[in-house]
Length: 307
Length: 275
Ligand SMILES: Nc1ncnc2c1ncn2[C@@H]1O[C@H](COP(=O)(O)OP(=O)(O)OP(=O)(O)O)[C@@H](O)[C@H]1O
Ligand SMILES: [Mg+2]
Image 1 (cartoon, chains in turn yellow, blue):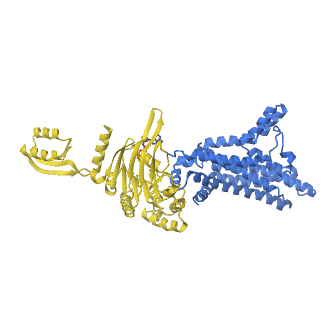
Image 2: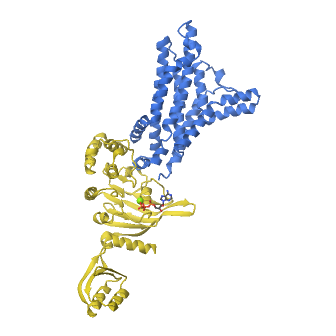
Image 3: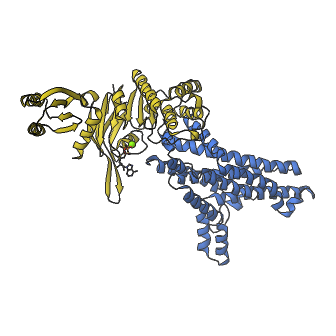
């Protein structure tokens, strides 16, 4: 089966007065069909630029990509792709149902299928009661909802969402999550740019992290947040000398209200650490390996790649 | 079908625009007032013998058609001005180009929408003028229709020109550029006349050549020739390059010209970054 997304040496540079800016720099990776893929990175990393190239809103300086096994711009595969842009700028004089109908037409959907699907989609994005309202009267979150609506009107096999939940309220986020799960169950590939790491943690199986136009890491979410080499230590009677030893051993030590957060490089060092505390005569009460949450992994990766 | 959906959408959008309301007001005023501004004999067309009445009807329709040509081209410019550029600025173009339509289809759909709207406008206005004469004086001026088709062609050319440049020029710049081109190429008769009085053949030939930069002026003259029955070969073919007579093939040239404009529009838009 062809990959849903296949990117090869994709580069986009913008010329500016003080030289060239590489928004995307020699990017290569794959997303398989059926995956829910989270695409992360700090502001200006190049996430939106990447998706815009894939959707041919803009054109790459060099490199190539394939979607659903077809070169970019292939209309046949395009009709199986949905896209929610980062900025929801729509023809706002249209009413919600007219808007969906127009986009259904652009997907080449026949009238009957459109009518049925419009009802479904309005329900899915929670805008059934606003079907006759003009989009210009919508709030930011409603705008994002109708934007998601036009992206899924065609029952896409591949869906690009550029920060789909940024303006959604808590209910909206939960609806979004449910929607993603039901899409995943139907085998839809989802490619999602996001800053909401908790959302990504709950929905994505694999993530790619970008920084300054380059891919820093692509991996399973599980392996990225696997029981790390961070432990939470609660102990009484740790002397300054022991503290010193711990600092020498650890990569990072954080201290907050009576609890030590220690990160080491290698797993073996953990037992060494425990023994050291015990042998010093301190009273070790708690020694818990901590899951490194995505946020921590993310911040660490970005820091490392910046260095 | 997708192109058609876009064309329909474009018509609806253009009809909503302010240009259309202004256009409607201008058009109604024009229909009401044009009899008063036509030649004096036009007003008296009812009296006099058959020959005079025919001549007067033709003269009136010729005059009215000249006005319609101008108003039609003017409206074509104003309804088409921002058709691509404003969508890029507003960001709405993104939801269009990311659908399964090619950029060629997008240009085609937009063009078709504006052309349908403006062609319908010219034909309805033309019919209204023709019927007013037919009912008013009983004269059925059939040669009006080929002339009306030429006016239609002019309006479509202006749509194509404005659309082509709306891929790269912001609304105001496009308006100024297209309007100037239209006014200059429609008034080269004056330049030609200067050449004639100063007996400068270069100026005369240049004026004639320059009409090809935008052939709407020349084709409008051709429509006038048809109305006045001056279509004999001697009037149209083999004219000297310095004579300011519309060339019969100018409308064919205009067809090629507007096709070229559409190709330019596609070339300018095909690989354009839209963000
Ligand atoms: N049209 C442009 N001209 C010049 N530079 C641009 C242009 N578009 C984007 N850039 C630059 O490319 C880089 C990547 O931008 P992009 O929008 O892809 O980032 P992002 O990862 O989506 O960020 P965010 O999280 O803020 O949405 C930025 O440094 C930006 O300044
Ligand atoms: Mg972005």
